[in-house]
Image 1 (cartoon, helix red, strand yellow):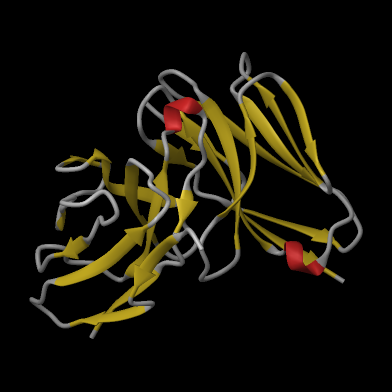
Image 2 (spheres, chains in turn brown, blue; image 1 turned 90 degrees about the horizontal axis):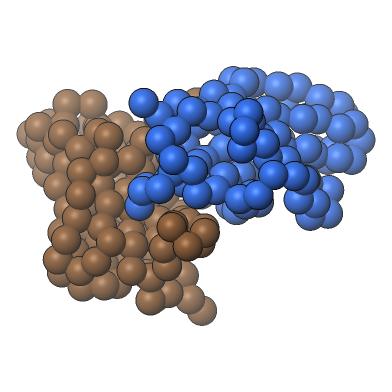
Length: 114
Length: 109
């Protein structure tokens, strides 16, 4: 089955700790995205990548980092510099937005601070 | 700047019809998406409009007016399972999808 997989489902972070959220897709999509969602809010873009070894900052990139070493994988690291990391994190992929293709979403990771 | 506006919350009765509006101001326009999201779950795709007019898909329809920067999602024969958030998103000549804050719909018996 093709799809996009996020892990873990739930993650807890201690003060001063970096944590990494995994996102893997086997849809052969070029573009991948990370969004953050706070309770009762819409999706805000953290980082996105159109091609391997290249990525761009979204609207709220501070305190986060990403890598795109493989087409299938786009991990997100929440660093200790992110002072309010508690949120629902969604990874998504698409063949290409400019050609009218939709975003496919993973099932999300709920990150909480201990 | 880029701005997408939707009502924050709406309520409706089972079996009724509800219209969720979305207005947008963006630099360029490729198309408009509607997604449904149940609490704690990923958004699921509902519709995509690129040309003016109404797109019908079962109980759900979506309308677009590019000249007015306006879209709506129409849900007919409401069911309890339609209680969810509905997200309007615009693809605007970039490689990013811009989301509104979402409309939380509650359906009552």
